[in-house]
Amino acid sequence: MSTATTTGFPRDQMTVAFYGSFVVWGWLLYSFNPSVPLLADELGISDAQAGLHGTAMAAGGILAAFATPRFVRSHGRRTAVLVACALIAVGASGLVAAPSLAWSLPAMVVLALGGNIAISGAQAGLALRHGSKASAALTEGNGIGSSIGLVGPLAVGACVAIGWGWRPAVAVTVVLAIVSALVVARIPVGGAMTPPHVPDPTTPHVVRARTTLPGWCFLVTMVAAVAMEFATTYWATGLVLERTGAGAGIAAATTAGLVAGMSVIRFVVGPLSLRVAPVMLLAVAFVVAIGGWAILWTATSPTVAIVGLFVAGLGYGAQYPLSVALLLATAPGRTDATQARATLAGGLAIGVAPFALGALSDAVGTHQAFLVVPVVALVGAVVAVLGGRAARRGAAPAVDLDPGVAAGR
Image 1 (cartoon, rainbow, N blue to C red):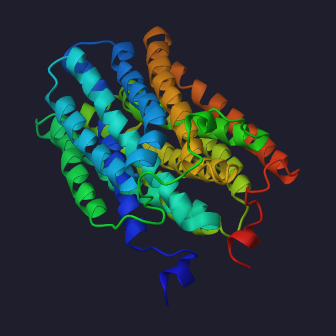
Image 2: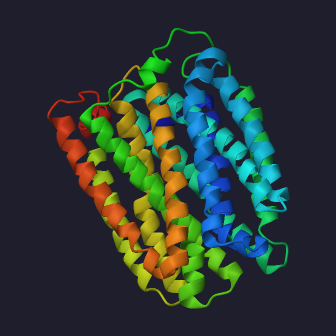
C-alpha cells in the first residue's frame, strides 16, 4: 500500500529534501533556545541582553523575508536552500565560538538569515508540491524537525552535566546543515523545486499586495504561535530554575517536554487535518496550550514542569504549521510572496517576544512574566475562530475548510 493511500499525501524525494530544512532548524532552535539562560550566566549578561539573541534572530528573519522570494525567483529554489544551508553552517560556527555578546549577536543574524531562507523555501515548496494537502505535509515536516530537535535539550543537559557546556550540542547544527545540503543538491530542478527566471507573481509589488481578512487572521495566529514558542523555549529553563531549584542541566533538559509534545501532536494533526477542519484544530490548539501553561506555571518540581511543558507542546505543535498552511491557502498563485510576509511577521515576533519576556523577567521575575503567555494564547484562539468565520463567508475561497475536500472525498 502506498504512503499516499495510508497517509493522504505522497512522500517523494523532493518532499524528503524539503523536510531536511526542518531538521536543521529544529535542532538549532531546541538546542540553542534552552541554552540562553546558560549563555547569560557564562557571559555575565542580563536576561534582557541575552534576549537580544531573539532580536538578532528576528533581524535575520526580516532580511530573509525580503531576500527569499527574489532569490528563489532569480536563482531557483534549490540554489536558495543550498545557500541557506551554507549560511546556517557559518552562523552556527560563529555562535558556538563566540567569546562575547558582540560576537554572538552577528553570528545569530547570519544563522537566522540562512534558517529562515531554508524554512521559507521549504514551506512554500511543500505547499506547491502538495496543494490542498499542504496542511498535512507542512505539519509533518514541522513534526520531523521538532522530533529531531527533541534530542537538543537533552544533548544540552548532558553536555552541561559532564562539564562541556552548551556549545557542543549547538555545534551539531553545522553537521546537519551540511547533510541537508547534500540531499537537496541531488534533487533535479523542476516542479515545486522551481527553476530560476521562471515568470512568477512573486515580485516586490505582490509582496506588498492586499491581504484578505482571513489572511490577516491567520497571520495573527502565526505570530501568536511564534511568540509563545520562542518566549517559552527561551525562558522555560529560567522558570524551572526559579521555581523548582533544579540544577542548570536538569532545567535545560526539561524543555524536551515541550518539544516532545510538539512532535507527538504534529504527527497526529497532520493526517487529522485532512478529516477535521484545520481552523477548528488551530483554535483548540491554543486552548490546550493554556492548560499546559497552567501546569507549568504552578509547578514546583522538575517532573511537574515537564508534564506542563509536554501538555503545552501538544498545543504549540499544531499552531504554527496549521497557521502557515491556512495562510498560504488564502493566496493561491502567490505562495512565495505570502510566505515572505509570514517570515517577516514571524521575525518581528521572534524579536519582540523573548526580549520582552526577558526584560519583564528582570523586572518582576520569570514566574510573573510568564503570565503573558496565556493572554497571547487566548488572542490566538479568538482570532483563529474569526478567521474561520471570515473564510466561510467567502472572503477567501481557496482556504480549505472542508475536510472532506482535503481528504479527497
